[in-house]
Image (cartoon, rainbow, N blue to C red; front, side, top):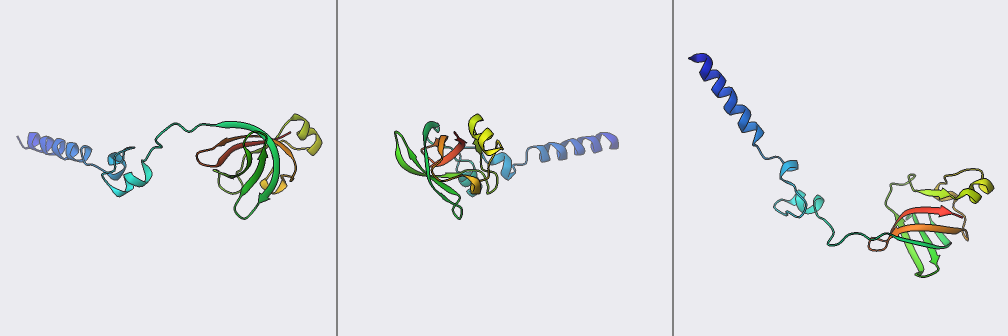
Amino acid sequence: MPLRLILALALFVCSAFAQQRTVSSSTRPGVNDNADGALEGTRPEKVLAVVKAKGTVTAVDLQKRTVNLALAKAGAIELSFAQPPGREQVKAGKRAAKRIGKSRLRLEEVPVGAKVRVQYYPLLSQLMEVVLD
């Protein structure tokens, strides 16, 4: 009898802990019940489009970590990186890699006036990838 009572009590306590709502389990995208869910769980209204374009680098701002580009179709545009400083995706194409001697560059090493191919999010004004040609 006491063994059954202890097992029933243990089962009740375990099920109570399993059903307890935590901040992480109650935060869902689109649900604004709590402050954390409103900040972290929001989704954009539409799918983010990725645009591929070719252009030239007109300026590099190392303080703001942005690149100004003159694109063939979109005109002049300023784009930032989504990655933290030092982790920017700046790659060199095959010809540029032979010319420079490396396949990846830091933002400080991107030459002004270089021909580039970019992929970026126009809605966020953020770069995905920069490839030097």
